[in-house]
Image (cartoon, rainbow over all chains, first blue to last red):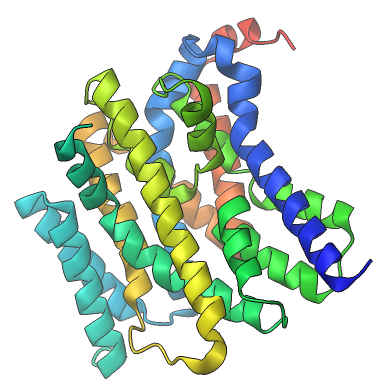
Length: 109
Length: 231
């Protein structure tokens, strides 16, 4: 197989596999959407997944300690701003700005 | 077409823009080292559209992995997506091609934003769901293309901008707390996440999601579950 054909087949296979993981619940469980167990999961999975995705996004900082202090400081700012103003964009951009400032200047490094 | 919902889809998805451009560009830079034309990075952003999945694909391409290996590895890596679909079953009212597009474009970040839309009326929510998915996909494609096109020539003075993603997840977790108000659920999630991180940092996300789903099912009790055993 030449190199472009190989690349294209890898892309197609990876795309099909990715789509399958996203589509399977809709293909298999659609008829049971109103089932109490699925409603239960639908209610409690989002908060659990947000916390897990947050930890996952901070994995490197938590495991290796890289930029841990700037991360914690920025998360604190995001939390406080969001509790006070409840404006997602302000909270996220301020936290990110602080994180970039702290890591690029090495202030808390 | 309601211009108002257009603006709010744009505003809601803005944090993802700042996360996807650098992340997509990081993929593009990695991909450009394989020596293929940059347009293939765009293609991958369009048809695969999965952050971790595309980084994995670069590794597999570099090692000339077999197609079966590509299939299984991608399936396992993205298994977490199944849980997203599971929790969206009843709130996804779109039909036809828009429905399948949204399922196709269901990344971590798109799913997270969709969980915020639970209070809007069905019609408005459907429209927002679709627009958010499409905007996020566009940001990702732009990032992939930019990275592969510029290759290794650029030096990111924007280091750290990817912090928008943890910040987004934190904001959405706070919003979830406002909606659900069950401290136990959040403490449990923190404990599970921490435990999974201790056991295996590399498989943290999949491990913790598997534990969380099992615990939620057990907490609900086995009674309803038996009714699901149809296939």
